[in-house]
Image 1 (cartoon, rainbow, N blue to C red):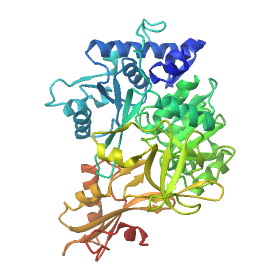
Image 2 (image 1 turned 45 degrees about the vertical axis):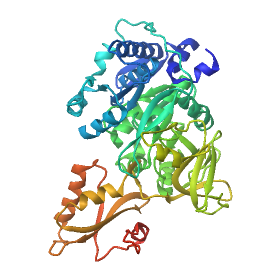
Image 3 (image 1 turned 90 degrees about the horizontal axis):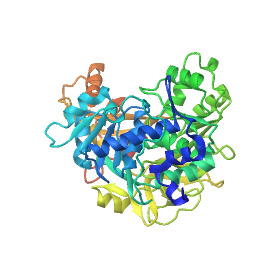
Image 4 (image 1 turned 90 degrees about the vertical axis):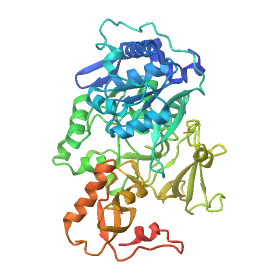
Length: 507
């Protein structure tokens, strides 16, 4: 297989089989183990089934799948015929799925049985849109398959559209981030090579799900590029389940996020749990507090290598490494990426000065689907404008200083303060409201500053609960104010715009 061909995600599995790793375990999921040959067979069957139901090249396929072998088989099966898988969070609401379908023009939905009812609700009134379960495409596991199922991957160019990931933005509506065939190889050749250093003897385990950019790199792209094994776990991660998975399947590379690292060190009996198989711990999605870093290393003797990435860049482009790390920082640029901090005048900021972070690298998005203006604003020449504010210290380490816009990142997920404000304003007791993100004990929380109408019982905890529940019911369940403050007035500009930076500074 030529080097150029191998860079296309459609043949990651083929390469491993051709290298004699067909009998090696690619995926462990509970009691099930799937070899590289078996996973390639499943991907081929999914490809053939999608072709037979009329899916064509570059047509989008919406995936509502949890982390099981069906996810990589369906994803790679779609890419194998030149179609474009679009994985999304299967826990979203039916109305969200409806938006994804209408935005992407997907005519096929592949949904686990647990999400099939929501999928059916989402497609009501959409002519020609059909819902399939993984078994409809894959049959019964590896039954009847001893190797590749005779479905060769179509010839694709490295710049062909390969898959989409949806990323939230300041409008509150997620944007389709378009990635190329070669983007997965690009992160493997950079972060995968210089930070992870995976080999066929490694086993990866990520608590972040495959529908997420961080998770799909951890649980698919990196291990399949290196010929490693990966552990997939359906359901919501929690400390006990994470400990059990690590102790049972003995991963060597562990990927998680700050909120879960914090939960692990605070879990009852944590010091007695066994992390001895793990050689490297990675973190992303939000800044890792120094105290969590310190406590985790003191408990298990393992430093956590924190970094920053994005859906638009597909994975991590700035990271601490085993040889160079500073707790609390995002590390240094990953080899293969260039970082630039620009000031308010658009000029490069001197060392130590805070400005907006721009990044250049081969894994950058091709653009936002249906958001041409946004694409033009964020793709500046060869650079992607991240919207994050950073400073670089005298040793070349990068330090996060907040967002250039008002978006809030909680638990690794973006939240729009405007959306929350719009919901809260619907409550009869709310006259005005401003929502901001504030750091509490090293973690980002959402705080709502509310001016109540006359007669509202602001001293009553029941009102706070009502406001929180309204947001949970109308938005995603993580998009609600953890803290509600009742105020006499809100700081505003001369034109009446709420000054959120002033609210963030209030103690």
